[in-house]
Image (cartoon, rainbow, N blue to C red; front, side, top):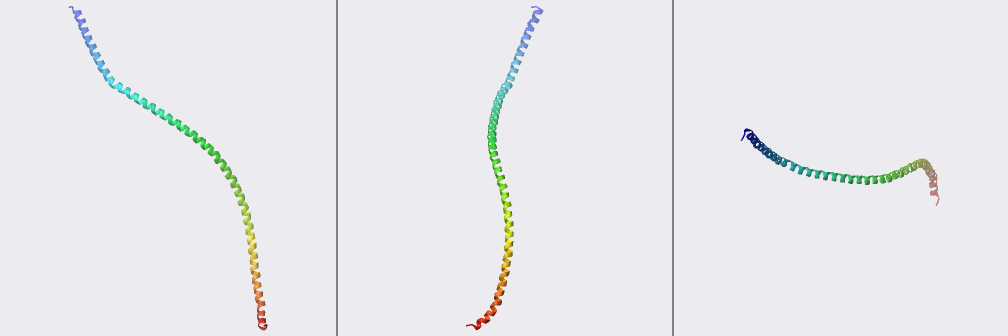
Length: 151
């Protein structure tokens, strides 16, 4: 064998050995990556499904909240109209009450004047009664004297 044939033959053996080592290294590296990538992919799928579940429940809750707020808004609107009408009625009633209290004030002032007049008249009657009593006593003394003489 010639020198060039030995070199080519050793290069082929050398290249084949390098290629086998490269293939073994790549295969062991691929196994290591499989240990990392496959569990990562499973974790990603689990997290994606859980994320979808969270988003779905959140959107359902927001939908329910929207329906509740719509119902609440309708109820408040209806009750607000009723409350506005009740306040208007109460306002008219308060105005009438104020007018009636004004009339009562005038009547009470008139009653106060009448009671003052009655008080004066009662005092005058008491004075007249006092004088009548005194006059009757003055007349009764001479009558007592006369009644002794009469049978």
